[in-house]
Length: 295
Image (cartoon, helix red, strand yellow):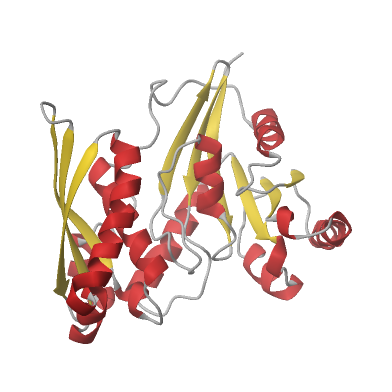
């Protein structure tokens, strides 16, 4: 009997959802940073075993939107839970707060929630059990699993539990499919991740990245990538570039490292910076940057 299904990964910002997706797949496809709202769109990751295909959907962290981009992100969350066979609700155990957690948890209508207590490597076991007990009393879950996505602890057991909850079904994707994300989109997200990690204050939240060129030269075993970083103010542009271009060089170097792992080739990366004022509240710009509602 072959099993398959869609598993939506949900939770508060910074719960470790994208880290979990990358760890389950064994390859990085989702941007990760310590800042909230790093994930802006649904990101699909496919893991195929001999008798099961897991289709994971990473979603943005659930929060109250402050602009049109934020509203788009929350629509992505809603779409991610509507037809999921299993919802992984991820809790950051290291900063657990019952009121904040249940406020978000109660917005999820699904009855197929598997509670995932993440970042257990940061707590003693006796501090994890009360979290499980308190949330289990508040709501009924399909199952509960403590893990550390960063340390990859408990992931095999988590996959066993998920598999047990999935229905019998077909392969939705070929065996070698890793994600439905276009390579250009993944490249843009890797670059944006480095911007999120290196820039402070509000600047990272007003940044978008587009990949304008991504071309592989087989003879040179070289992938040429040209990308544009969009920000909302001239002062932000100056910060992104940095003194004598040092910040942009740093971001480019870090992004190139991940891109070479992803493409399995050498990478020549060219970065440009442009200003688009208040793009987060422009329907046209949101669509241009790929933030389109799921059909």
